Length: 615
Image (tube, rainbow, N blue to C red; front, side, top):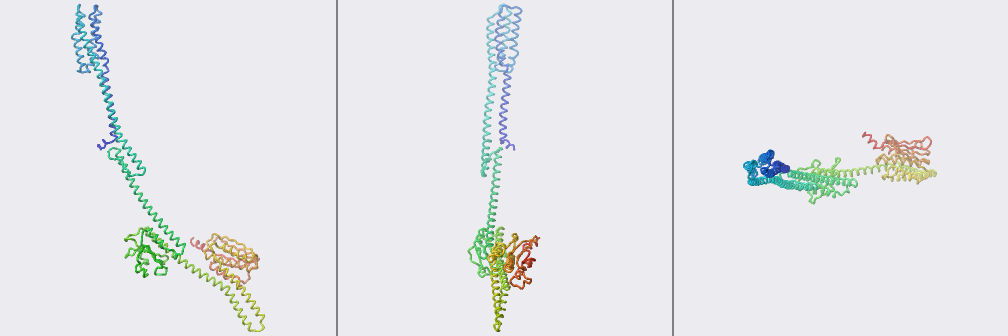
């Protein structure tokens, strides 16, 4: 911990700041201390310099002729002042500061000379009547030279203090410059350069380059930060790689799902739009092998009642096993053996509604296991193919039933119309043959011939009506278009009739069987009114009630239906009643109170019955 602390950049900066601050404080304290000691140097120089003047003044006073009491006092006052300046005050203080140096020696020499020779000589000269002035002057001159030397010592002492202050300031400035340079080097090496590299690394990481590395060889904070940057970059790179791998896996999974759904959609569309027997399953099987990655796939298609396939498709070039050549398909079509233990094959039965239409055999490479999505795709495709074949089988059954129903309708129509007319004609022919054997029956023969003509005309009319009925078809435009077509055909035969059509069942989903029967009932009633009512207006109405009941009414303004219409075979009432029973409805034919006939038929459509059962 302590070792890392000394490598800290913050510690280095703080140490440099402390060093600069400590150097400045020491420099200032030293300057203050020296300046404090040198503040009396100028005064000492002045006082020492004044001693020379005082020496000359004492010599002058000692040699003066006027030696009155006042002059004597002044003379001794001058001696006391000189003695005071020399032995007390600033000179003594400066001497004490200088300790035992040259200044102290010179000060002691001047003091000793003053006390031992100069001062006694001045007093002696002043008190004697005939003093030796020549010696006094020489002594004073020697003393003044010593004072000059003392002044020079004081001056040197002051200059030494100033030089010391200058030296301290210079050293402080030099050291400060060195510390500043050292601080700049440290900042540049340990702060600016690492920060610049970290900034560059951060920019490269920001651009997505997570392979770049920062220099983390040091032990300071920026090295720790660089190490953290590297660790963070490695973590981001690993996370990015993991996310990219996940995205690739998800993309691959979505791509497989998309291909699988596209394959299933195409198979479903082909099976629904085209007869399954005419569908080429080879491209579908090839696409399935490409999507799943399984190269060896077999598709065997058979009829619901068959025991062997009528079509065997393969995606791999291989020789068929003997059981396939001999159509021994029991092993593959076994519904309880999806994953046989004897082989690595997987078999998906084309089974729907308890009927088997074949099998899809998958042979993975190297006995590997299928993934869940592959297994689901094979199951879905097998179900789609089975559903298409099932629909084809049901469509064939429906066509057979429709053909049988149509044949039954044709037989009933022929029986109710042409068969009865031909029977009647046969009876008349037999009657005519018997009349030929008799005599005087010419009038009866002519009557029978007239009846034969009338019967043949009626049979021919019935035949035309049957042909028109048998040509009737619904081409997808609905009942309304078929009724309009019927009205147009009748208008071409006669312009005497006015037709009114009221159609209000556009939103009712009739089944094809309901459309056929409803249209046949309407056509039969319209044709009866057109040919037999002897009126000029026919109203057709088709609407529904709130109880989902559909009501068909055909009304005319003719002579009205006879009281016993069943005796007349021209009206086709039996046919209409038969169709009404097929729709589980009620048919009523009644004569209007004023004129004309109204045929009414009502029933509940199949969709309404199913809705009622659900609720």
